[in-house]
Length: 171
Image (tube, rainbow, N blue to C red; front, side, top):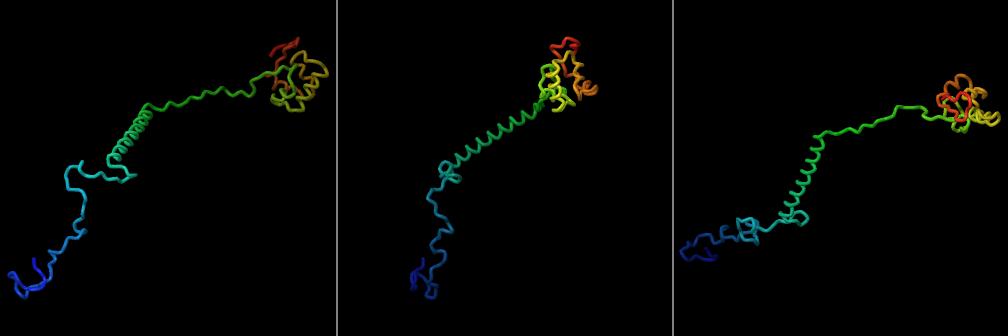
């Protein structure tokens, strides 16, 4: 090493007396200082804590568990798709406009209104006729009511019954 200030120890008098760059102290930028001794074995290295302060090992375990969950979901989805989706069969009854029968001697005006071609006025007239003239003796007696003609009678006849009729209890 050279010293500042004067010649000596075999140095020439005209030599540069400033310290050389090679002798300058090393900065921490050139060689970072670590507190850990250098080792090649992974177990000697400190574990890094990156995500939620979890170690590398914890993160790997979480990754493996997540992969297993997604693999299980995928496996079940593939099995479900492979066996085919069974469509639900909905059986419907044939559409029926009216699936009931009314007794001509006991039906209220509301029940009469359920039949095609019978409105509130005609339904009330049928009930009033039955109350004034007595019960119908047969289904055809319904024609005695003003407003019930042949066309209306033929339309509603399939839904009429007469439980206490003495004549023509058909239907």
